[in-house]
Image (cartoon, rainbow, N blue to C red; front, side, top):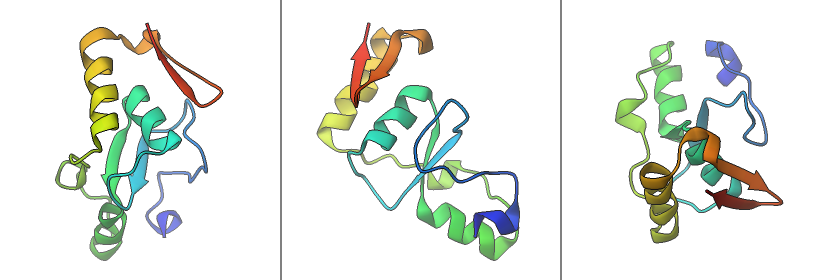
Length: 98
């Protein structure tokens, strides 16, 4: 599906190249947390499906995930309040904020 519209490459894991994380809903996964820490768009799967219908990538705003689990909300708060991009570090599936 994504290949039809072009412009993106699908990866199994969030990397330094990742710009978007597509999810079916609020979940607490390593990729979701990595995407948040990297400042990626966290969008619902509906974004891909509706973009396919429109035959063009739609603006992400309408499809951005806003309903996170309480644990993820804490991570977002800490990232926003206390960290710059260079102060978030992932190692062995653990997020370090400093």
